[in-house]
Length: 479
Ligand code: AMP
Ligand code: MG
Image (cartoon, rainbow, N blue to C red; front, side):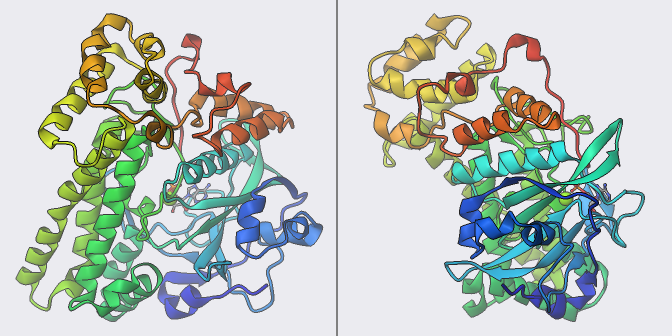
């Protein structure tokens, strides 16, 4: 196995060669065998001592150049010129079975020169959480970084309490972020910025290379990828929780599962993150937050967009204007599919129908995932499961009658409305058991959420909303 070091060599200004820590007692907790196979690994080998040493970065192939990547970022609107991988490393690049270049990356592998006050470590719970949620997102068909494995290190991590440590091995089409471009721009070296943009084009948006203005094409490709991504989040009620510019990829993959959560009762104001006091990254604000981040990317790219600054600003603004339209088109098409309605349905019929439904769901605090799944049952003539989700079931009757008159396709709906998502109470339950050394609940949850559209007998509790005593859910980041 060879690990490429193209990023490390082509963009040395953004790469600090670094070595992972040596965990005292590494033990493999979970491994995505299918992903291992895609990457050309023998899963059985990854379970051996040498395999696990690779998964924590203690034993890397000869010739590899692990690096901590430099990036900047706006965190909750505040610019931080130097963030970077404080507890992560890019081990190198792999070519997968389909010939695509993928990053192999570690999180929790020890302090780096970017660690600032941090300990460079990660705890088992949050790394397993990223593992479960990213596997669920992938199974839902949503672009995401992937989780290859979580290895317990045998080291203790000090948070509010003492916790067992872990390293997550993560795979992505790259770890380039909006913050990578902000860092390069901040370095004041246009040639570096151009090399970074060329690298991003080659890796993610090769079509841009042949465009008349390749860097404008790159920017527009990122806009399109993010508009589609955030629409996909919204359609499954995913709340990312920390959409800082360092957590937004150039590839259009979801990255950094810190304080994320799936919303249950429908309410656009929903926030889970304990540090998001102003609700900046509330469910309903995500499209705007993405557009704000893309404006920061435009600022970073400005010298490449046009030689004349005024014209560069005009091109950036014109491109950014596409975001709301592209987002809306992606979301509207997705919502129509969730309702089982044809693509060519008159928008003057579809739009008010959707608006009215969302208003009813919000006022009834209806479980988003359960409702859309119950709706295909209603399309087949049994409205009761959908009605029951409303505190006043009669409130949805008139809507259901008008919707059914449009002839929704129930089978098509079951292919886009998941039965199983990683519900917060189930994730917490699985992580609590894992903390006691009991991995079976986590495996059962993974079993449900990695085939989210296929309803299976015996998995009813994985489709049900949190019990009322679960209370208001709070999540934490940087853990
Ligand atoms: P995040 O909120 O996880 O995206 O991280 C934001 C920044 O904080 C990144 O630069 C991380 O590398 C850094 N960071 C988070 N946790 C730690 C830690 N325990 N030790 C060192 N750096 C950290
Ligand atoms: Mg991050």
